[in-house]
Length: 234
Image 1 (cartoon, rainbow, N blue to C red):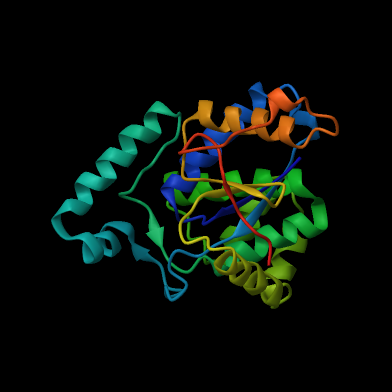
Image 2 (image 1 turned 180 degrees about the vertical axis):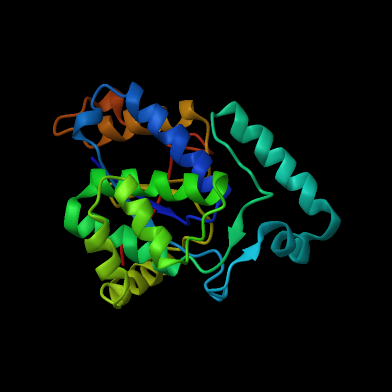
């Protein structure tokens, strides 16, 4: 089973969704047969490259309620074992980080990309890292087990930029307007940072649905928020 996860590094709910999905995957008996690939999505593709304090950016969008929003996400993250330190978070354009994630996938494979995704999210949300800075991105790559010099050399050019833009355009064509969105086998989608139980149910149902010889009584019915809605491929 292939799971493509459309996600932005600068999205707290994407971090929550990643954590919950991985917990569900760990409990899924057929986890070894699941390939997870992260696909790019930018919540703000027009964001500048220069880092800005998170509180300033959120306050400009939501006004006085911004701090309360952060407090709710911080508490939710703590329940999931995630640290959100919004006092240190820097916001800027995530495109360069998405290019690095594509480089990790193409060069080292899906497992390396998953490790890098987690490292980037931790660096962004808990350590005040600048995800638009090539040196800090190369350091994150090294922490995830990638070659730092190769990552730095890649980031110094513009390789895979067109491919990342094409992936972002593909998300729009698929009708994806919010993240995280988890697309299973290119056919079913689960949107949002759902509870772990929802992701596990989706894995189990879709595994039955795609079984070579499923019993009629085992055909999955994915309704409401518990599983999926069809997602056509272009």
